[in-house]
Each structure stands twice: as structure tokens, then as C-alpha cells.
Image (tube, rainbow, N blue to C red):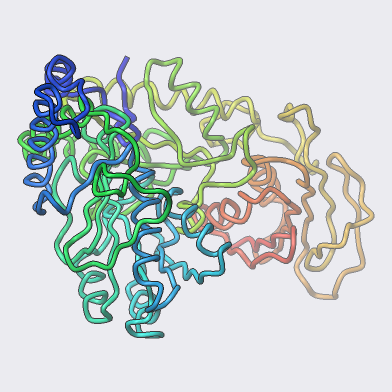
Length: 509
């Protein structure tokens, strides 16, 4: 069964297995003790630190091991903010950072600190003009800027060189979350703090890295002890640390060849998916991206069902979309980018993936999407296998999901407004007195219905209004704020904006 979720975690590298087994025999003692077993363990810990530091291009005394990448990020943010508390309490983060950074920002804000969230473009790259403006607003007074080296959901690589130069000019430290790129290469220089997670390069889970450059003001909070410079309390998991350092070196040795090979396979997926599956949008930067990751979103489908369908077909993938039973909010990354969130699939290829496995995935994908769409009764022509509604009836004619009925539709003369129309439901029509000369409009009531149903119901009725006519979709699912504008962009219609739960769409063709 092909595993295509390398961005979450990789299977253990063979070198990691070998190193961990050897360290279990030799490194089980407390490395802070002076007896023979303790000294042996200390030698292993020092060797692992030196190996990791060499791979990262830093000094061994700048690097500490953490219990996880998340813990490394939390410690990095808190330590930098505390160390620079006399300078200022303003934290700058991009809107697409890993949730660990965003949670740290929320905690800082709850404690009275200030947080500025930097926007990104539609491809996920931080807006450099916002970075410059935020740093210039209080030159030298911001405490820290956090920016990932590459996004974990869509693979977009951030312009770190430019941001580092801005930070240097403003004398603000830059924290780089390099979890997604350390398997391939080091981020460009100019950063002050860096974090990583071993499971992203084939090391064991439970090992993170934190690097703090000399000269960076840093004061970790919380109870301290003598281990790992007092930054990470508790005994280090030495066998796992040894395996992490060894696998990082091994992954880097293979990175150049694997990067080129996997990029070719990802290019194949990026090209093939829109051709094989109608109404699909590939998201993320087309060139400045990770070599092994591609993300796409499918109209008229939900991500959770797609993951299950692909899992049943034998492919392990993930999704950045949160249109599932567990939450009503879309991915914060997709929301910040302003791209389609419904039916989101992330494919991240591990080293060793073959062309035959990618071809098998591309062969299975159309049927997986078709089966999911068919259950949701999308409009005709979407590859969902559903029959289009006919005649003058509204958005009905299919089995509703989640036990609901089809969206209620009201037809009025004049641009449809958001106050509930006194119209027949379940596909009935009512003539209204609207503004003379204004285009005929429809109101689709999708309140209480989850992604992707508001878009499906919109797609079913858009052809019932003339060109220039307006459809108002009443939808309280938060994902609709992304998916309705994305649908308009993909289908060539004009999104007029939203007031509360009312989204107005003008038919353009």
C-alpha cells in the first residue's frame, strides 16, 4: 500500500534503525553521570550533537535536542520573547505558520503581548510588503518574526533570504521552522533561531531540534535543570537522538538525487490531476515548492470522504481541509491563501516512490472522486455520475447528505436580497416585485449545511438566472467563505461579496 503522507512523518530510515539499536546497547545510562556507563552515553550524545550541528551548519553548543518539533517551537518562541522583553513584546507571524507557532502566538497574546499576522498571496508566499511595513512600524522594537521555510500543507517555499535581510536591517531575530526542508537542505542564512523534527526526515518520533545562534537574546521560561543547557528539562531520549542525527546525515546524502527524481513525479501529478478530474484546482506555488509535495482541491467533494475513498483504494494521503465531522472550519492555510478548501488532498511522496506507484494513484483517483461526488449529488458534468435537475425546478432531484433535504430556493425579480423571501421551498418558485429593470435573481437557502453542499446547490441553479442575474446563497458554514469565491473563479462567474451569511454571485456567462 503506497504511503503518500511523507510531510506528516516518514518511515524510519534504515540508518535510523541501525543507529537506534546500537545506542540501546551502549547509550542507556544517564549521560550526566561520571561512571563508565554514563561517560559512554555522554560520548554518544556529544557525537550526535556534533553530527547534527555539522548537517545544519551551526556550532554544537548552539544546538539542543527537544522531545518534539512542537516543543522546540514553543521553547524557541517563548525564549526569544522573554529574552527581548525589554525591547518590545510584538510578535510577527505569517498567517500560514504551523499550528504550534500560532498556538504560541495566541498564548503570547493572552498574556498581554501583541501579535501581527502577516498575509500571504494565493500561492502561500508571505507578502514582502507586509513584512517590511511591520518591521518598519517599530524599527528594532519587535521581539521576534516567525516564518516557516516551506509550508506543510501546500509545499510553497518562503522567500527567506529577503525576509532575513529585512530582519537584519531592523535588528529583529528571525525564527525559522525548517521542519519540512531539513530533509533536503538547510534554509538560507540570516536566521537567528531554527527548529526541526526528526520524523520529517526518517528519524524517530520524539526528537526535535532547536538552534539558537550565538548573540541571540534568549531566556527560556519555566523550571530549568542541568540537561540540554537547561532549556529542555528531563533526561534526553539518547537512542532516539542518536538515530535522529544519523538519519539526518543519511537523508542529506541522498537528497540531491531523490529531490530531482521526486520533483519529476510530482510534476506528473500536477499536470495529470486537472486533466483526469474535472473541477479541480492545484494549489501552492508551481515552481517555488518542496520537491515531493503537491496539493489539490476538488469541487463538489469533501476531504474526509476523499481520504477514506483513496485509503480503500490503497493510498495513504492527507488533507489540509477540515470540512469533516470533527470541525466546521477550513484549514487556516487554505483560508489565508483564499483558495478552494473543499475536497482537499495532499500528496507527499517519500523517498523511493516509484513511477508505477504514482501511475497507480492517478488511475485510482478519478473513481475515488467520482464515488464521493455521486453521494453528494453534484450538478451534471462534474464526473460525479449524478443526473442534473431538469426544467424549472430548483436545487432538488438528488438525495441530500447528512439526512437533510435539498436547499430551498426562491426566485425573485430584482437582485436577490438576504432577508428571507416568502417563497415556496424545495424547488418552488415565487415571483416578487423587485427593482424594475434589475436582473432576475435566486436565493438558495443552504443554512445549516456543510461544505461542499452550499457550492453544489449554487452550481445547480446558476443557469436558471440570465447573464448578469444574481444568485444569493445563504450559508453559515465557514468554509463557504472560501469555496463560493473559489467556485466563481473556477467557473467564470463574479463573486460580489458577503454580508453575514448571504453570499452574492453574478452569472457572467
